[in-house]
Length: 155
Image 1 (cartoon, rainbow, N blue to C red):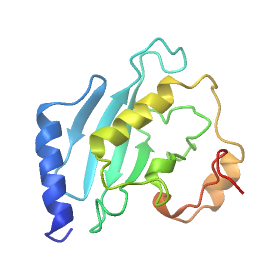
Image 2 (image 1 turned 90 degrees about the vertical axis):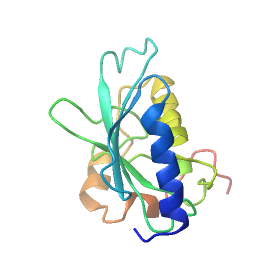
Image 3 (image 1 turned 90 degrees about the horizontal axis):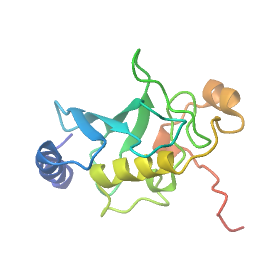
């Protein structure tokens, strides 16, 4: 990542989240300003996610914060991809704030984590999005370049 607005902003964010994050969100690593890993937990009594911790990967472009980070869930031996109607089995998250239409530079790593945590908290369906297998097999786009259709989109 080139020096400039993005690097300066990420440096400030890293400094802030290294010292304080909301409950259930933990910084795992941020060895550079291009890729960070954070763990999140659902803190309520949602039975779908009881006792689970999930790993998020943030990839930042040179255009951050103008362009959203690429945020995906990472599968590890002790960190599954959460079951959710908006999370594909390859870790891609269908969330409007992660796309160019819903992203705003006022968002940051902490607010994205809190939005994803909230998305999980409110889930009542232990299922993948419709067409998960086909999407995972056929998609070649970066997550932020996928043009998801959101149910509340107007025609």
